[in-house]
Length: 522
Image (tube, rainbow, N blue to C red):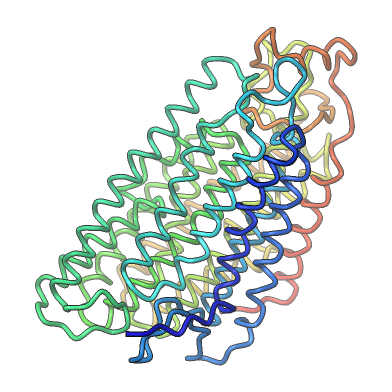
């Protein structure tokens, strides 16, 4: 048996993976430099994004295949929908790299490099994980799907745990706890996926995902249950969501942004692959997806209403938004996967913008009198932000309105309509009613945050260098960077880095453009 390789089609996957290899080789050549590693990482992600462009022009039903069998089935197939998911993941990862640039090039406690050699390691891990994310939606067989999912997951465990040596011991301990929670979830998820894959092969006689001929329908139903459950862990769907608030709150903020956006592309890509393969055989899978969607959006919104920390609020928002991403997949509509992808793209853009502003506000907590202030990521730290820092408050408000589905963020309204349309077309009224109730709950979640933004200012907030710590005031006496800044500038007031303003401007412009000219289904 021979394979037709067509490696050019896999460039969106190969570009970040090859960049990871170059980063490691570069670290051998110039071990004491940090910026070149991140420049290579950014270039690899940008090259991967450019490589997805040919796929965006494909007609419906066409795909760019690689590793194709004589039968015509390919182990890697990138359709227009897959290319959209790949482009979203690569650009979101690029945003995270730019956002984390200062943290990943920060000095160690002695003023030199981090003793962990952190910069090349985190750059290579981020590139490896992104390569896995990009490969998932193009998987044409179970082996490729499982390997890609684990490649997309395991490096993120290390990213959560690999924090700066200047962090206080309790903060480092919490990061390890978050990494262990993610690792445990990943192992359980992989076990479920492996069991589902075994049942799939037993039921169909093949590991390919291209519309199998059912041999044992009962086994195929079990395969669907285990595969969907394994992927539900990764998408943060209820009841497989418990790792999300723990890991989000413990990880460095740029890594949290990565988990909330880029990783979700892999989850949705895997679900689309499985649902498209199984949905034509048995509708049990669709019922399971519907239950997961209803439970996720309801519990996520209810718990988010009680949160007083912005990171935890965004964590539970991720759970709720996972329900909306799953919602269209609960129907038999041929456009369900496109509707889910459309919603995910809007969610990723809005969530990235929210995280950029949260990180900027956290960095703006003055160094003096920290003990009397709320944590830097607390909701109270955003009080009166519209008056004190309108250039950050307005983009954050637009992101929250998009997530809530409220005008003037028309792109969010369109995303929710697009997600609901397949369910209404199928006549699944109970799910449509649950979704409608959750629109109201979601509005309450995000309007509560908006009310804090427009309320009276707590205190004047200065701008400080970008930090990724959830509590900038929690540092050890040996944290030379923080100590030096306090000694030379008691108020810690220096301009916000230009790259942060660039990210805010670009993401805001995308949301505004999508609201002025909403495109609907991708």
